[in-house]
Image 1 (cartoon, rainbow, N blue to C red):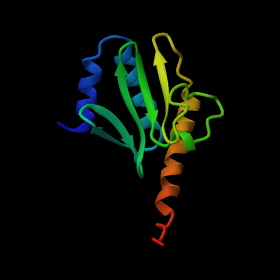
Image 2: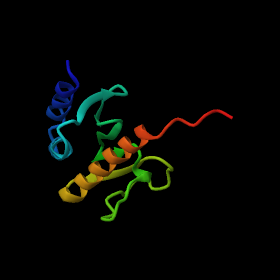
Image 3: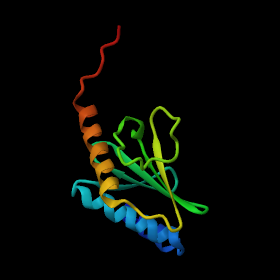
Length: 129
């Protein structure tokens, strides 16, 4: 089964608001760039990548968590990140039932993550001293 099929299955098997929310987050992420690839990692996590990991989405009890791998390095002018704020790499957005998705701001975060991934790829590796 492909990663996209596994994500379809996860959404279908999550019949409450979390499945619908994960489906909408997925749609918004994929709409940002046609080069975004869906992966299935860590024994059951939908992952979106382009030149590196952009974000991981998971339904949890009572919420959907969207974790940006390098979220601590991304601009977040709309203050979407509301979880993992004390980490030095990842930042997350916890979506609860009834939460409204700020689609333009979320897509700006996805664009920033792609730009960050691309900039990281261009940097030469540091030489060992």
